Amino acid sequence: MELIREVVGLVRQQRGPQQLFPSASSSDQGRSIAEFRKLAPPAFKGTTDPQEAECWIDEMEKAFRGMGCTEEEKIRFATYMLQDRAHHWWESVERTMMQDAGSVTWPGFRMAFYSKYFPSSRIRELEREFLSLSQGSMTVEDYEAEFDRLSRFAPSLVQDPKSRMSRFEEGLRPRLRQGLAAVHSTDYDDLVDRAKNMEIIWKETQDAQKGKSKRTRDFDSDGERHLRRPMQFRPGAGQRVPYGRTAPDRRGISGVCFRCGQIGHRAVECLQTRPGIGACFRCG
Image 1 (tube, helix red, strand yellow):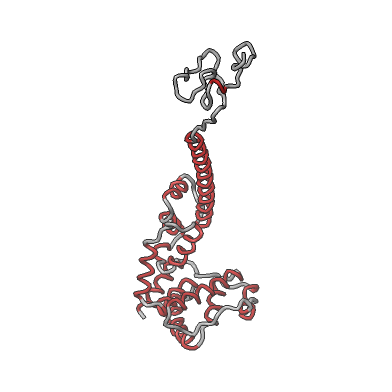
Image 2 (cartoon, rainbow, N blue to C red):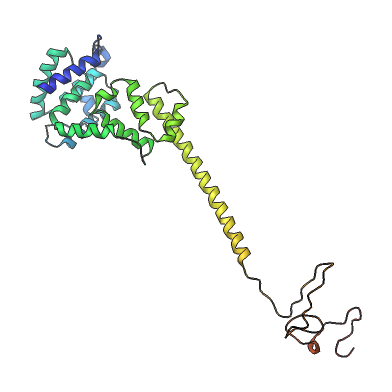
């Protein structure tokens, strides 16, 4: 019962001086439970498994988004899906909340639901996870999903748009935080979109730098292999001497032709002509 009182207090803070939700119009009244059930939302009978309870809330909220439900419709449709022990629990809780707060919002219902089907130790554990949550190696999209999931268990930390935006931004990678500090986000959705766009640009820049670095390494590697390639000497092949230079005298070296200075034959076997004459070296 004390937990229910805390939930009622939270609902009053969220409500302020205004009504929790406007009275339904004639068009809202026309949306029936049968229409809601076409989305095949699951029923809930009660459970001792916190994960199962959390999954039910997730499925309800997915159906709400699909129909664009008002606050009143969320309560009406969700409580209709409660059965057996869960239905009996809600009947008692509803009386208390209606008596103290005057009406019920979906956040108020959700907090009462968690206080019933989540052990307090598990809720504290999830609160700690939220407090220590950071993007790390996750993408912005994955970080956003985890942030939204865990923030439901720490509503006091994200009770208004400004605190929610601040908490989300604090968990982003430093590079993204620095980029977002230079711009002004109008709301939470705008902040998330900007973070996603910055991440895409950052990744494209990294990929381009990696590609450039790889091409440079490949070029350097090819040049190094070319420089290290040993020069092969082909016996008998002549070498041109640059203009104005004198070829080294090799005639004192064993195996060098005395006539032409090349390696691989003797002077008597040399087939090159005498300079300027064109005569055979052997016969003249």
